[in-house]
Length: 330
Figure (cartoon, rainbow, N blue to C red):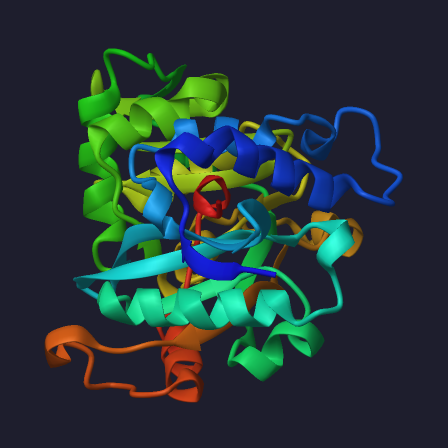
């Protein structure tokens, strides 16, 4: 049986979408509405990504048939003041008829070789370490937080929150995003096209600009007390206060945790009266969450002397308050 491991070809995108669909849906009782019930879910995702190229998907071909694959979604990430090539791995699959032959491990090996050729610093995926650990990926966790606070009255000011206009506000969002994220570790570098096609194309109704005197100073995305993304140019305490006021008396969850944000939340909290304190206790709770399986590949041009292996990478990510905004995960 002739077999080959290579890059996916442009002409094979629809065939590959069928492979992914069959592999993910086979033998599973999928809930109604799950994206996995849609045969085109993989193809729709890559078509919405301006960064995707077919060579990022590594495939095993047997007798001209696609039977196993790994997609290496190439990105550029902010890393503590620097930018590096990174990869989110997804679409990992083998056709049900070809399982238990070790094919996927071979494709993963090819994917690792390809990532090294591309100068990729790290890759991560979501799965079980029992499965992917033998290929070099290791578990990593990070911190998120939720705040249940009453906000000081003097922080209301002249802050106005309005929905983002997907066409007019791209430049403003890009400016705020780059300013806020450039010194963090993990966020994806976004172009205006990426904002339009990947971020706002489906989720514009959940994005809001925070303005003062008609000037945008920050933004956030979220609903019902769950913040999926946030950023600002200035006045973080006013912005955090404005966000918390959207859901009074409710815990607000943030997918990011830095010592500065914790300090700012402490500063905006109203001091309760003794009677209030007996019945209500405000809180800022840190929560450790699974952040995928990670592997170090290389540090091109020596711009990351802080680590040179996977264990060192994971320590670095933890020490630098790793954050990945949910919409960028795939």
